[in-house]
Length: 276
Image 1 (cartoon, helix red, strand yellow):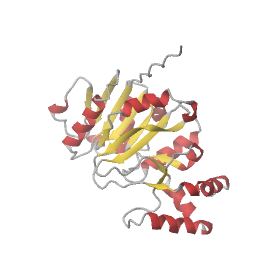
Image 2 (cartoon, rainbow, N blue to C red):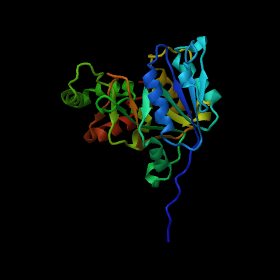
Image 3 (cartoon, rainbow, N blue to C red):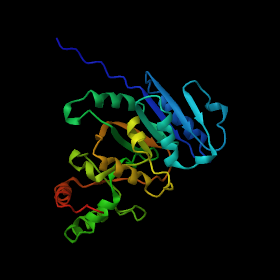
Image 4 (cartoon, helix red, strand yellow):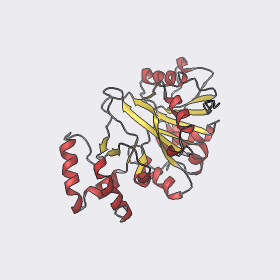
């Protein structure tokens, strides 16, 4: 008689990048959503600003760090979290993210799932949703520079017009799209948005964020391209877990129409995205 395998327990270091003027309610929601996962072994690192944290955030499972040197410098915060992390599994989020109540169960389901999900990973993304309306947020999206190169090709103008028709939001950057459903074959075209990163600690220690880049200058895209270029790490997507962004009006991601996947694959094989 077969018995169900016991879910794999993963010790995790959660790092929260806390910016100047942070929303205390959002931060508290993030911390409580981590505790609600009931991860057997975990720690929370608050990487903050030049001001000490309020005592309300004092707790045995929370390490509070504040420094004038990188009070708002996101690349430095993420690197310092990796340096301080106790556990091999590292999850870094911005201070306005919150974890779905079944997020950790989704991680366990992924690592014990059928082989088709390729359970071995070094960096693994998951779905991000906007808490305000449930729309898809920035998660594992197609590199916008690659999508622009693809849609600018004369033979793909029909796809460009179709996307404009489907997503007429004038405030939306046309080139920010994601795959839905996820396809492993397009891993080289995608990047992990910097608001939520789950990876092995040694990956970020070996390939740190470039601290000369300012936040908002696609520093997450630059980092992810270096991770991919190393060809040392397994990059995956977990379809079983969700995190939410509490920040209103956070840009949303539109799904690239699946009927155009063959054209995207043809462009990939033809080298259209090289040096994009």
